[in-house]
Amino acid sequence: MLMAHPAVLRNLVEQYETLRALHAENGSPEARRRLDDITYTLCVSTGTRDIDSALTAARRRLNGVRPADDSLVTA
Picture (tube, helix red, strand yellow):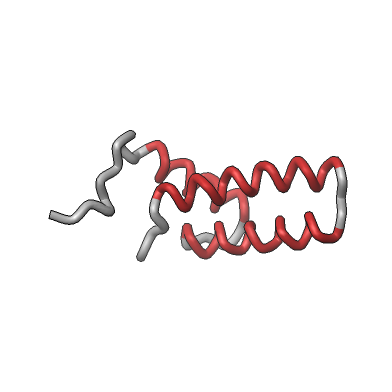
């Protein structure tokens, strides 16, 4: 299975957490739609079917990445 680059996963997790906080405070339809979009993208990016599994998979992947990830560097 293809996995999203750690920078992409990190960004998605951060967006999810921010939108979750906004939705909890605001609850606007726009915040809800964006939260749904990020939830879907996290699930697809991690090969999971629910947000709890997606967040767990993303965090495991992020914890296993070296601080100076060189996966985009070519020889």
